[in-house]
Image 1 (spheres, rainbow, N blue to C red):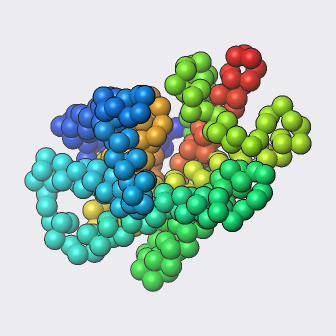
Image 2 (tube, rainbow, N blue to C red):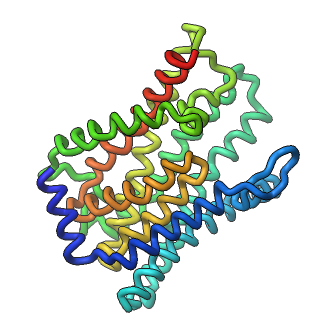
Length: 323
């Protein structure tokens, strides 16, 4: 933990701004209002403004543009706020910064849309009784392979001689502090597992209508799903704390940490409010660790670990105490 505290102290001393933090918190509050405040009539219920935009994008086959705008906007806001507060605009004049920013967001936007393309194809061509499960499995694998392959090609041609593959280094890595961080999360996740909104979203496997936990032969489907569900966060950690932080080192340095946390908040737009709010602080913390350690292994341990613990906590609460 000592090294992590050193990272935090260095960031606080050299780069932290209370103004920037307060504006970031206001952004999170505003985004929560956009996502969770329901006032637009939709059939027999009311929906939020963001949800209404999503429905329009979904039905008009504009999923990719929707995600691109949704992800790029907070990222640009974060960088603009930083430049405005610190009166530092130089990196905006760097064409590589603009191109890398747009390409990065486009990659993640396409990643977010892949599952819909796969789902549409399976629904039309597959007679498999567990098509919803198959869609999740293929979608997770496809998303991961797409992100890793594209960024690996980029790294080969641009950064291979400058740094390891965006955080995949174990040099001087100590996993113990991250296990302590996971242990600290246990009581928080246990408390969350008693909340209705949390149990509405978790465990994620409850969305698989063709799988029944009471049927022993279906357990293998749950096991495979949960394994790949955890690995999906491996990809997310690599993208946000690897590529979006470490690929920008030579351009903006630690200035990338808070803007990337803005975007990280927005990808949680379909999650419970508590998770969305905490994602800003968790994303900032993992970004700081990634920047100073030049490694994403700690973030992977924490992120994947928390994902699996949330699944386990919700599973225990829902199937052992609520039934």
